[in-house]
Image (cartoon, rainbow, N blue to C red; front, side, top):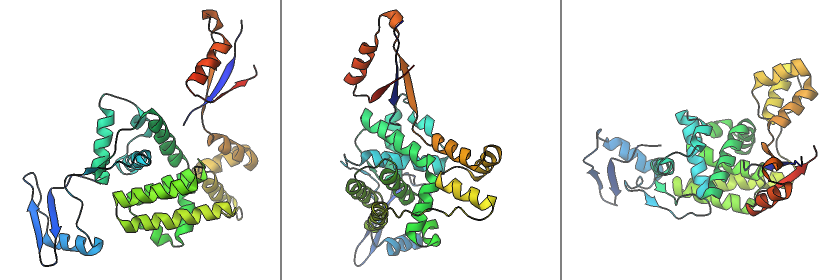
Length: 301
């Protein structure tokens, strides 16, 4: 029986506005919507205006044709749902009836604008970015904290801006996407979803990250001190829970624990076997995968 195995790599805030507010040089006007359940105090509006120097978003979110960064928009919204809403990444990846409309509705409520629907390729990229950002979040946050130069600044970053920074950091460090495109499109997303100042912050942090990567000077915790401190350093480098690193190190030794964490962070792969019993040969399988533009390679049995 002729068989073959192919390993295929997988590519792998809030409520709608109830009032519209307009600011002029001489007066502040408030238009109450009929569905508004809770009145908005004038002090809160004035505080918002002084803080942001511009009126809040319109009650009718616009559709933005950000075709090149729409997958980043959806990825940031999914990460918000996971971190703040307790959603499960695997469930968000499932395709159900109306799931696309529901997701775009959440993007609209969260970011204040809609994007065009994603195609299959964009959805696969969203899955990879969301899964990878969650998997490497401990390390990504350590790098971002180092770039902020101030722990208080990092802790005070608003949730959506933090997700945009994590996505950009993951794309540069782990996906190795073109840095200029990653910086430019994440800056645009921050400006669309938040404000120009947020885009400037994203621009500065990601540009510094690119420079540090090019100079091979990315920050890493030092492996010194007692077992607990070394476990914390390894947990940051390989983005694993500290308790898990300590347990694996105790049971397997540090070298074996590091190998296990490295393997645990690799992208999953799928193995396919040609069923020659049904007349499906190895060449047929390879031709089909090539037609689908799926990267694959043969493994020895």
